[in-house]
Image (tube, rainbow, N blue to C red; front, side, top):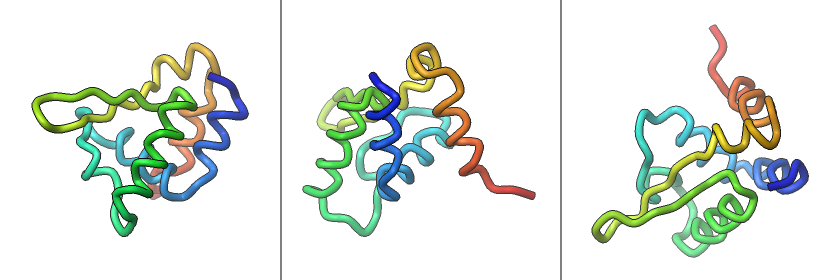
Length: 93
């Protein structure tokens, strides 16, 4: 996990929205709940980049693939980076 890799992963609007949705969810989410208006092959590409950057962990339950945002792990390596990005995405009153 590197700062460059995390920032590059977060630079794309589709991946940023995936991360935002995961952060807002109470539980890990299946792949289909993280994107709209992109082809499944395009979504797979974005998931791969998020995994490679260290932001995302995927696991299978039954026949569904779930996604876990690795906030705690990212905070250890890059303190404040992901939480600052997520705070900037939060709706303002």
